[in-house]
Image (cartoon, rainbow, N blue to C red):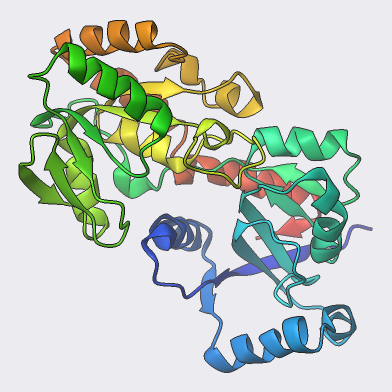
Length: 335
């Protein structure tokens, strides 16, 4: 006789950093569609867990006093090796970022060993763990675009700027862009300041054109941009901690939802194949390709909104829920 456990809630983080905005949007949609409660950890519990994890280093001892209960879904921003009291037999974690090296895997396994199933968002990381004989019960559940950003096939956006650098600027593309501007000195593009929570936008000619303070302003800038760059993390020269993993991040889906033509640099791997990146943008691997592609995209008059809309319909959060329910049922978890 099968004994199913029940998923009843989402254990939410309480951080206010803008990097968590998308996580909170996922949580709200999942909670609404699957009728789950969202539970936030209070300050005392956070302090108490901190004492056990860091000061006493007794997480494993603590676990034996955790009673079996209904399950909670927990989005984990990145896979850590420091043992966490939140990762119990009552937790189904969803790992967003994974940058661990091979020599850290045993610590990772120890951290997540009590969880009934660990959902891995990256297909590349999922394959990597399988190849390293991961002892955890893992499943692949990809990241998505929150439904709030679903794109209409009849969308009309006023593309004020031919090119804008949105988010972290990869030196790979910056070097190409600098060479391009030397050959085309009249070319004007938009770039942002580096402070993610207080970002203003200027053109390369020094003209202030807007800000992305808050998520709505950032999305508005996306919709005003015709062309933007995207690089998978392991090829981003400005991002050092990735250990060469190249997960496709939600930012790619955001660019598509903003109606941007994407110039990209990415490898062929399980993630880029899952997201069919080569159907939307080619890999730019030389300056010659960069110049040719940018000139072609500048010439394009119509954004392929219908194609973009059909693509995003496969990758919005609500479209991921059937897979989530299926994966949970395979692990004797009901909702």
